[in-house]
Amino acid sequence: MADDRNQERQRIRRTALMLAAVAVLFYLGFIAAGVLRS
Amino acid sequence: MSTAVTDAAHIDDHHGPDKGWTRWLYTTNHKDIGSLYLIFSLTMFFVGGAMALVVRSELFTPGLQFVHPEFFNQMTTMHALIMIFGAVMPAFVGLANWMIPMMIGAPDMALPRMNNWSFWILPFAFLMLLSTLFMPGGAPAGGWTMYPPLVLQTGDAFPFLIFSVHLMGLSSIMGAINVIVTIINMRTEEMSLLKMPMFVWTWLITAYLLIAVMPVLAGAVTMLLTDQFFGTSFFLAAGGGDPVMFQHIFWFFGHPEVYIMILPAFGIVSEIIPTFARKPLFGHDSMVYAASSIAFLSFIVWAHHMFTVGMPLTGQLFFMFATMLIAVPTGVKVFNWTATMWRGAMTFETPMLFSLAFLFLFTIGGFSGLMLAIVPADIQYHDSYFVVAHFHYVLVPGAIFGIMAGVYYWLPKWTGRMYNETLGQWHFWLSTIFVNVTFFPMHFLGLAGMPRRIPDYATQFTDFNTVASIGAFGFGLSQLLFLYIIVQCARRQGAEATSEVWDNPKGLEWTVPSPAPYHTFDEPPPVTRDVAFT
Picture 1 (cartoon, rainbow over the protein chains, first blue to last red):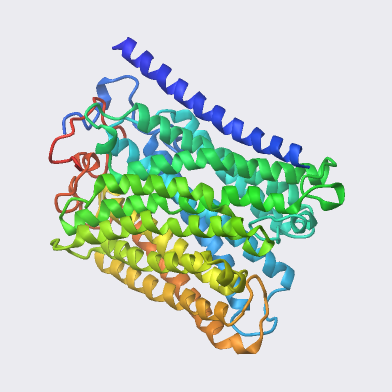
Picture 2 (picture 1 turned 45 degrees about the vertical axis):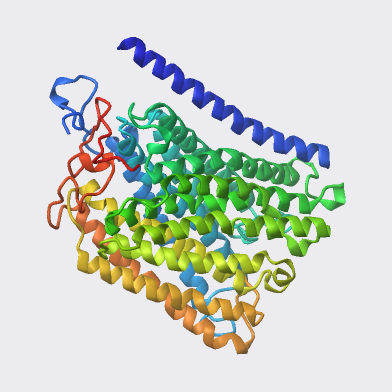
């Protein structure tokens, strides 16, 4: 039971971090595109 | 039913709500946070609405009557920012917080502390934005699109605007992460992805859109900030930059944003119509594919906002046809809702009335959108009142009627009391009549050549403007009825609601008592035939 909960927490953390990384990538990516363009 | 309610007395980590204001400040409970979002959204709806009434008062007759042109521009800009980021988006996040865990059989959102943080950022962001009204130079007045170089003429308000947009974006991204993580990881075992209710599906798609585009808006306004204060020239032609690039980046965010504000409303209507037609949703899976297609297409149509800026013919053709393509999955949805009602045993309680008005009036907004997609026609319509009519049809009887339908549908589940049906019907009819009185004449004004964002106009536009202003005040006053109905339910006035509330509705949220207990689904609930959608 406790193992299941830990696994679920790990899964949640992994998914959240992945999504946050995508958001940061988009943020920095668009600014980088602006730097290259200007 | 036995798994739905937690026996609070016997489990240490489950307790009731705190007493006093700290309950709301420290809460990690999805229902509390949902309520906070909804109350905040309703407050902002009235603040933004008051600004709209300032605008409509000034436009009641030609000439300058009540406010200076500068203040008029501040009102149009603030009205848009507050309604989009303060009213519509938080309302949908509030509904998501309340309903998604209950619909998928989860005990709470996956990241409850981040959920608290997502909400409590918002009041500070909007206080900061509203405080600019009292600063030298006043509030931002260059339009919600914040186009440079105009926006760089904003006075002391500028950094406050940028910071508040960053905070709104941060809040939205955290909310979206929470929604996705909850749906992906915390569904009850028997609920496969295609068994999820449509509101959950549309929110899942919306959350992906949010994560993809809110950072883009943040990037754009960061570049504005550095252009203004740190000597960069991203968008300054004098320094080798390109102001049109801002428009491309902004609308790469801005067009998906439109779908962020309408997809959850599609989900709400998809819940309500089957309940009151007493039939399963027609084409559940095709609704999922249609919503996904709309989301995909929303990323490749942004430049239809910029036809008059100038672009190669191939660009014009691509963005025109890609935009028209969106009508296909949207049509799938409209026909599926209609087919759901076909030969159904329909009744017309307030949520159903709002959903039906949504269906008809959103379609009007969709059709005027198709007209705007036609490049040669758009060159005539651009920046006219026709555009104002179009997006208000999408956002008011579209998004806001969707929210109102959802509030009436789920209010008995939240409060345990039935709302006053007679007052609800009055609210519906007044809102529907006045929304058309307000916004329909704007089509004619636009086609006759009245530009948007002006405090004064030529006298030939007087009659339709007067009608629109009367409609706006009627619509605004009708919303006081909405407030009264909600307060009545929240104060536990009205008939007690059963757990099902309506006539045999589908979904796990109707298996828990009304009002929904503070903690639900300690154990994953079974998805029986009685609650399943497909």
